[in-house]
Amino acid sequence: MRYATHMKTERFTFPGALGHDLAGRLDLPDNGEVLDYVVFAHGFTIGKNFKPLQTIAKALVEQGYGMLRFDFTGLGDSGGDFSDTNFSTNVSEIQAAAGYLADHYGAPGLLVGHSFGGTAALKAAESLPSVTAVATIGSPCSTSHIVHNFADKLEEIIESGQAEVMLAGRPFVIKNQFLDDIKKHDVAEGLADLNRALLVFHSPQDRVVNIDNASHIFRYAKHPKSFVSLDGADHLLLKNDDDADYVGRVLAAWALRYDRGSPDRDSTSA
Image 1 (cartoon, rainbow, N blue to C red):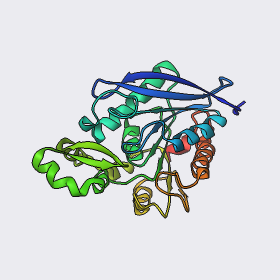
Image 2 (tube, rainbow, N blue to C red):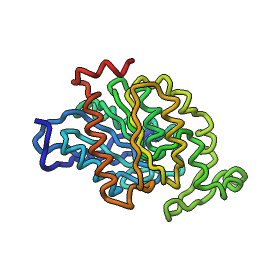
Image 3 (cartoon, rainbow, N blue to C red):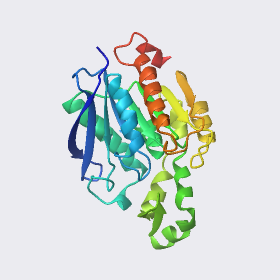
Image 4 (cartoon, rainbow, N blue to C red):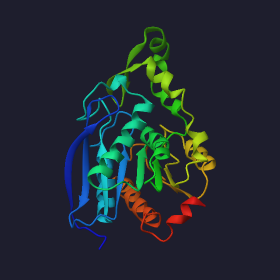
């Protein structure tokens, strides 16, 4: 039985990359039968309780998946200071979330990330042997893409070491260490060796992360890879509640083919 009519939720904390407790929420089928586990990485400054993430979790749980979403350091209910984080800490914390699942529930077979979280998920997958599939939603192909969100503050960050910027209507401090860190990563270069099934969701109307990013991710990655156009959707999947539900249902159907119990699993190494 792979279908659940309701979901139950378990909450816990686990250590983050900078030593602070991260708040996690694991949504599970109420019948206790889990097809596979999913780790979801939220977008830049958004947090685990973002409404579209809840909708995606519900759609996945209904199909038998258990989905863990968590707040990165300094966001939501997690401890620490956001200004001390960077792309590397995001990657490490996705891996830490996967490790917590492996130790207490079951190792995840699927990584999913929205926006900058999807870019980090692509990198994190390289060190997680249990993961057979990765999906991105409106994600940039390059770590440097995020800089456009605070381009007007770049000079101040470089000269003063940090600056307060407005992101999604809220103030955050960005330090020079963040800029230094993103220069160290070439996510596109690693895509050729991802060796996982890949699903790329992106809206042609995305004004935050241009759809050219999806084209670049798709071009660099090897098969098996798939692309799903979220035509009419905005970057945050807030314009229409059906957009997040669609992502969740398509994701569940696609992931089933690459589930570790599937006879098609070996195709990921093609």
